[in-house]
Amino acid sequence: MVDEIGATQDNAFKNESGQTLDVVNAANPPTVIYTNNIIVKMSRWDFLLDLGQIVDATKERLAIETQARIAMSPQHAKAFARLMNERVKLYEELYGRIPTRQLGKEVDEDDAENDS
Image 1 (cartoon, rainbow, N blue to C red):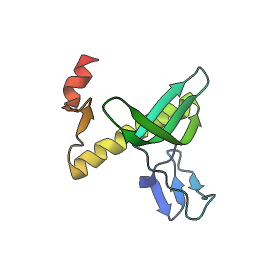
Image 2 (cartoon, rainbow, N blue to C red):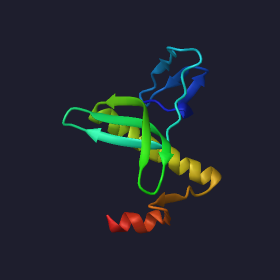
Image 3 (tube, helix red, strand yellow):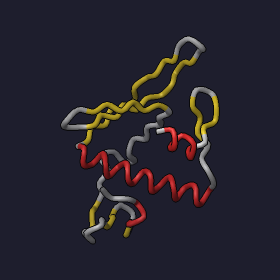
Image 4 (tube, rainbow, N blue to C red):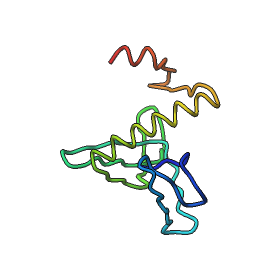
């Protein structure tokens, strides 16, 4: 998995092995999908991420419209999770703590991790 910190030019990256990877976008510019809801499914062979947008929310009902589905191998899912954790940590170092909410109340992640 490649991250943009290893960028060498506009669409070229270096991976952990030092290889240069040229990234070509199928669409120019590539399609951007905003998501505020992710449902993760898995099987023995792969992980599926359904990226959705909340289109209606009431006290009784939450309507989510699936925007895209991403499928990846368990190995890529693990690398993606590691990369996302690194990026969130870097983001918080640069811009401050990201507040998280669960069922309408803010959650202290240190407490949430201890509950697991």
